[in-house]
Image 1 (cartoon, helix red, strand yellow):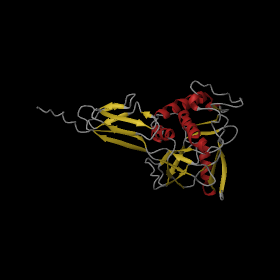
Image 2 (tube, rainbow, N blue to C red):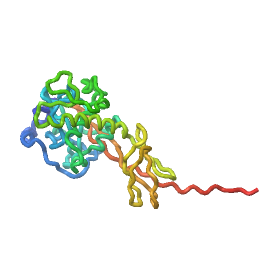
Image 3 (tube, one colour):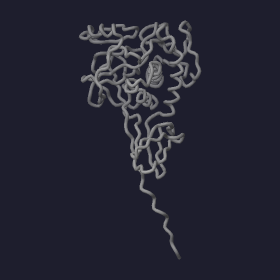
Image 4 (cartoon, rainbow, N blue to C red):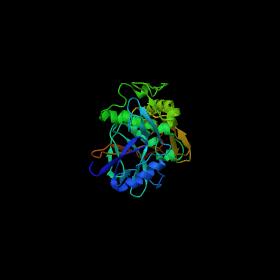
Length: 309
């Protein structure tokens, strides 16, 4: 792109404007940038830029199968920060393997319908969960892997998962770094070698979870209780909040019975997804925004009437 300069940071390729190159050098020395801003970005009205730095604890440096982001020695696989002008941040994900990611430039994000499995994953394994210490680097690497599998591979070449299916990776021992036709995560970086098997297994585990809980979700009510379903059927194990102060997890049928005194129920699920498609650089998806689904308890059915003849 005109006026852009490329720079290698720990093996991942970024592009950024000349005006922020000095800042980029500082980031390269730190390896990450501290979180700024505590709010959320309204992508329907705000632009955002990708921060040109690694997110500490949210990535691995590796190759995935035979795809090596950045260079042949492996690259960044994990979550980036998308940052609004006021400093608020959300996680962002690469969805066009093989192209550089543009950083430091504000882009417009538009609402998009994506694979319901990726919608679920990027909603659940988001920045808030990461900040709370509820997700590890190899799990976020697995989320990125599945974004390539189910969004990037569906749209573009090269296919990161050509010839292999993450839903067949249960118990898979990833290929050694020195192998040809590798399957799974592999690295020549000693810092990350211990989590290659974990990242490979997490890719399978999250693929199964996302398939079972793919969005969009539907929340319906009956006289007996509430039922939660997704695009692939009933959703088990999600916590329903009732206005009586009780929370109940859905069973294998996606059902939770009305507790005594409850008249309404709610649950958060995956909502709207946004992405940007800059000319000359990689398409980027931001974590799916959550939405609250709520229902009211229906009035009790009247007793059956009787007629005497």
